[in-house]
Length: 319
Ligand SMILES: [Mn+2]
Image 1: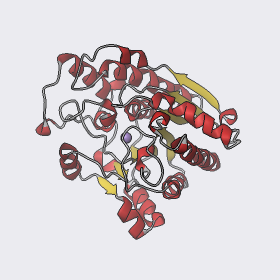
Image 2: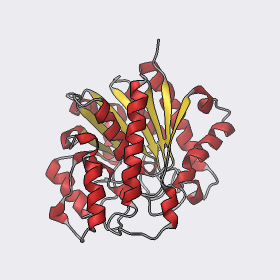
Image 3: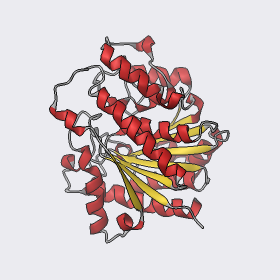
Image 4: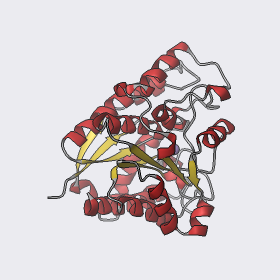
């Protein structure tokens, strides 16, 4: 019998610089109703507590805004991922801002301490910042640095508060395993809006980015095969799908940090589906739908939901 998908839902939006990502999951729900889909009836849901009440409090740590709350989200979400995997289910994570993905990776690694995890990060951004390098202090730009256990202090641009360091260290070491992934097991698709400290880190670590142009030039079948070859030594693969990887101009601005010149929905779907066909994908996450920023009603969620529904069906065939 096929194992079951379980939806793991976390509405944490304290890692983003703009408000409203916590409404992203509900926007997907509305999209599913409009498309007459039974998606949210098909799968069991596990809700993880957010710390969004902190938005009403003053910012204590400007270098990593509300990192205390993100640290808690990491703990709660990683636990939910471990529980879901313990039940033999496939965790399909619906999250608000991308900060929580560090907690997802932690949970995957805590359940599979002996396994090598490949990460495919489909995103306009590198999300490789640390409190030491981030110009904004928004923690949704930092999840991969926690998974890689990297501060990138060579590129330090500011002082970090004691309180922020304490939480940052806990996040990197969550589950007593650090790092959780290796740079050679991390692959970007569609990253096109980065800051210099991230560029420098990507060069130094040799992190592969399949740009939108390269994907179109070589063809999506070829680049996904190349990606899978690069992850050949990984036992399992985690896909993190940030909807800002999609083209903001041609699709929608309904996401926290929209960027033009991204993927078309069909292109993103091709990447995701080909990866799942490898049968190595053990977790999928969709993040950063923000209906309050959508100038075309609920277009981003409508688009993202189609990808979500297709992806879930693909997982069912392959899990
Ligand atoms: Mn992201």
